[in-house]
Image (tube, rainbow over all chains, first blue to last red; front, side, top):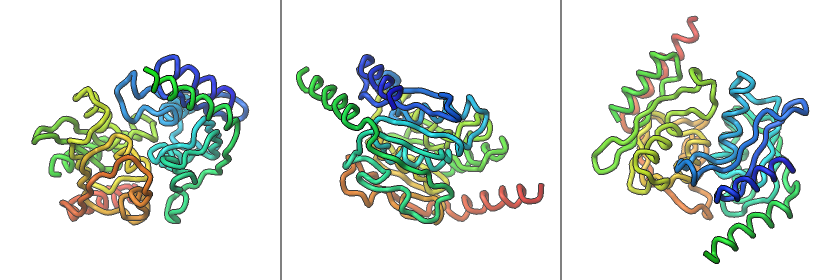
Length: 144
Length: 144
């Protein structure tokens, strides 16, 4: 998670909402990305989507069952859905998001019983640090 | 929707699950795409995600409030979430998906009250044709 946090720091440096993600399999990092919505102008360029695309490319496999995705903030509806579609084995996130989080915070994509995959989810890892980073980013934004 | 259907046909020709999408604003088509999961090896390369990325790029705006996205099949959890994150104004889809659809079929992303956007949704447009296309594709796959 500290590497995902570092990715979030990189996002801040690029004036992006500081969210970072890494994908790990067998102790090896196979993808790392941060939010790039502002720099690309692409509303789908969230850290998790970019990390999943990278990981699938690296492994030559669309199905990421063996992987763990670490992300600093609870995934949004789109990214939570992407965890299902790419069959990520495990998702570990930092801070919960009670407004937009879709792995338990605001809603939960896993509540629908007909999906073809359900990742294991762990939350609250490095959450204070991830929260502080987002708070500091938005506090700075409000000053501008 | 017939243009989205044509995109789905193109997907089939490329041996992809036949789902197509177009994005329209003020009567002008600003994006058209089909499923590219197999050819790219990217589990996030659904027609809707690709069409949203194209539309945002074409318009130089991440927020697609003025747009209508037509797609031949009800969006999955990831793509339904992408409609929220990109603030697509209206979504029109063909066939419902009672297993994976997340705009009313299996689940509904709009049921969560804390999101920052809710698209208008219309379903059942050209649904018989869209359904027949998917059925024919999978029937052919089973023969192989």
